[in-house]
Structures are given as structure tokens and as C-alpha cells.
Image (cartoon, rainbow, N blue to C red):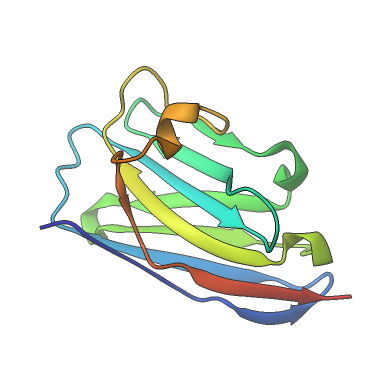
Length: 129
């Protein structure tokens, strides 16, 4: 059984940093697409960063240069380092892992298709200005 759990959320002032972690157990890492999503109140869930078994990494334009996704398959973990945080980064952040089909990139609609992948419960990030 695959289990996904996020940690590391919290409150920080604008310009600060947070590191989110995602523990993933029970998943076959021979083929995967890992991703971080976020959902702010009143807005649609959006992909923030992805990392696939094909070696491709992608980011949402608004976080490029500020966020870094990394993975540690030996430890069944993934993280998202968030620097220079802005008020607009405030959201619940979710970790997801699923099979890599055609592509693993931010904006690929399949990554949010019902029934695709395994999701954590989310962790809240609040950035105050």
C-alpha cells in the first residue's frame, strides 16, 4: 500500500524560507512522476514542481529561481526548498507520486486526472507580508 505524507509547513514572513518534505512508502521507483501541487483558497490546484524518472524537472513560472525540488529515492523522500517566499505562495501544498506516462511536467493535465497517482493530505504554508 502506497502512503504519502507531507511535513514542514508553517508560517513565515515574506522573504523567508521553508522546506517541505514528503515521505513516500510502498511505491515502485522504476517509473515515477513526483510532484508538488498547491491550492490557495478560491483558486484551482496548480502544479508547482515536478521530477520524473526520466530526469526531467520542471517548475511553475512564478516559482522558478526560488523553489527547488529534490528527491532521495534511497530514503523514499522528496523535498521542496522554498526561498524568497511571497504572500502569493500562501496555500496548502500537496505531494504526489504516480507513474510516468507521456511526460512529468508542470501543467500536464493528466497529473490531476481523477484516479491518477497517490496524494498526501497536504501541509499549510502561510506567508505574511
